[in-house]
Length: 422
Image (cartoon, rainbow, N blue to C red; front, side, top):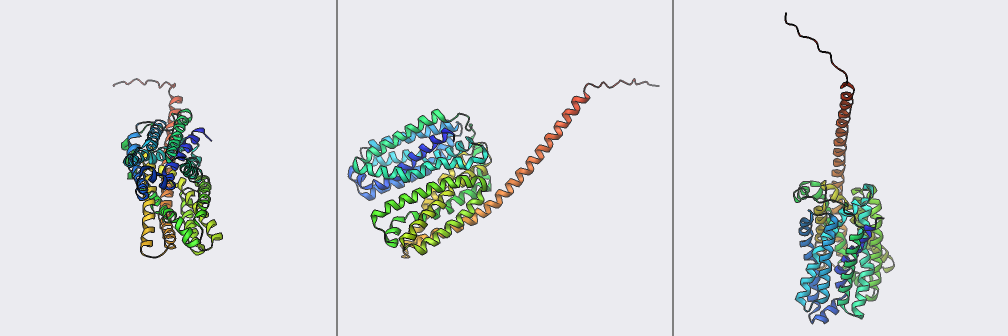
């Protein structure tokens, strides 16, 4: 494994930790800044806004630079944002610092995915992306629980300072290990031109709809476990840790299988996700069955992430592809909002906590439909590319044959025939 992938995974771990750890530190931040817990909860929304703004904007500004230069600059912003969060004297400053730190989030994963796939042979591109994303999933297993514990025992400011240190380690790793040739500068016009391809929009739509299934359920997993499964609040954290382990395993498995099966793996995976959610809804009142099925659901859902991230870059068919890659990260955030909103809608309608599970199953099936269309488009693109390759190879052979005959015939002198006028 190239060491540069380790640096990308460390950065992803830091980003994942700072994004989700606030959920576990709400009481400590509220007490420290003398504001309500609901006000602190808005920090989560502020961070999401920063991701949506930063993903396309900073990626567009960075297309003139190499991925190595852009990634280092993004980590500098991320580190400064978390340091400012640790030192924030009041609530308003903390909100601004969180938005500032979030600006680097989507662009880092977008540009990082492009760099990761350049570090390995083409047939291992999805696996390389999955190794980077593993840092994000491990943040839910290790970073968030550890950060919550540190906030309870010491201070939430120490947690943000620790994340800033992770940013510094990432910068050092990128400077030491990321080769300058892992991608090259491109221009904004060609990057924007990728959005004229229908295949790109298919993948973005697939991400938004298919992964909304994940967030329709995960957004309400705690009350589902306590109200339906009957677990005590003390058991929710261990179950979520198991869910995090499942997402990590799924990410690694998806990287390997995605390189072999491509977008077809996503279509099959979404069908399996819908089936897992339907089973979860049926056994949710039995803890010994519900918990393993929930972990299976997380494994299946996260196995698809590296595949769609690699596919959107392939569909762009431009030298870089960092802009569409970052757009796919924005689509993930839209999936988060869509899934949570649809789940909230059925809950507000009084349909109970089983309803978001069925909503998730429906979204997974809707995503399957988009994936099937994407599979057909992918096959058509591959056939067209193969035809273009055959034509180019045929032309090259003709040019080579002409060159050979020119070299053979050039030494032969053609006798001059006198022209006599009679």
